[in-house]
Image 1: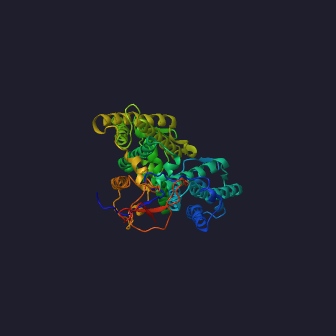
Image 2: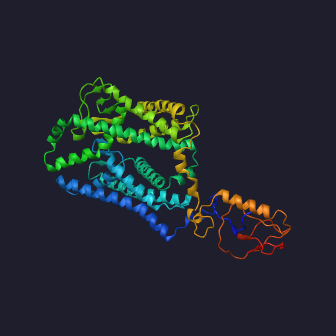
Image 3: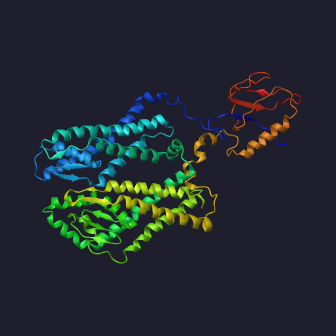
Length: 508
């Protein structure tokens, strides 16, 4: 038998085998109280993205009015319309309805808000802390929206701007910043979000798969837009003829770049075979219907002639994206052929995300009519392209590549067990075993069971989960027979007596 060694059975929160403490009502008691530090962070979350966005709107509104040679009478109305337009709130200017709004400014304000929310997240945030962050992210923009609605109402008597629907304005602004807040929090601490939502494994894998499918769809659509633009680049010069001067050329260029993501989203409809409507005109892989098109350089990529016979070959791309998604989910989920829940949820979530993008990217454009996707048809064909080939990819992978039972990588990343424990504690320089393992603990346990099998002294209670260290601890008392069974010793050291016939065990 090896020589006995001193050991310390230390109970620690978060030890292996000990469940993590759950947040209770007592943990949320500070929801209505704010520390100065937390208040400062929340003010930045509420004010910094709003300030940046409002400053940019003011600068652009003044630059537009001055370059057009207009007076500054309608400046307040232009600023209010700019703020609402950046947040996709439909506007009516005179008798012209403007629902087709650029996505680039919207994406920028959402990214700014999400980044600020991510900075505000601490590793040990509670539900109350996350609630404060989301509330602050919504409070600032909604306040500015209320002011802009009041300004638009007041400016309607000076400029031809009809006040938008109040409920629609708050819904658009609140929805965008809610997505920004949730996305920012999730980007900083995905595991915490998944823990709060209590999602099953297949749902987590489906979310990762949906994100990959959306990015692949948008990437293929972007490639199609670039190729179409290069093919029809000779028509770009015609669109600049109406610019008039340098300011007009710069304005058309900036307008085209601002609407580029809109055209990419519309190209997804062409990619999946649903087609895209552009007022009286429409285009897809099967047919092209001519009609008037706005004279914008970006729209030079829109086909005007009859559909070529090889265009249906493009449908191979969404099918390949679906198959690739099924192969990925076979490696990152526990989907079986008879229960492809992650595969179906991935197809469904990706369809919902693309459907929302399609709804935002389209809208009414004055006399040209509606511009956008045929949303019902788009939703059906997109889900079909992602679900059916995705299931085929899953079946192929289960039969030939990845057997059932492989640990899902996405689930392991989201719920990494080692992240729940304090690595610094287990790597303590005072630890007896630098690489502590269950085998070491089992060896110590067997030693004490064998060595004290015939011990008749007072009973000792040893923690089941502990760590072996050599440091000295505070003096404690040993539980005597008949006393309360609840242990009062947090740190206890068990030492073999030096006397050969001693029947005491010294606790300290």
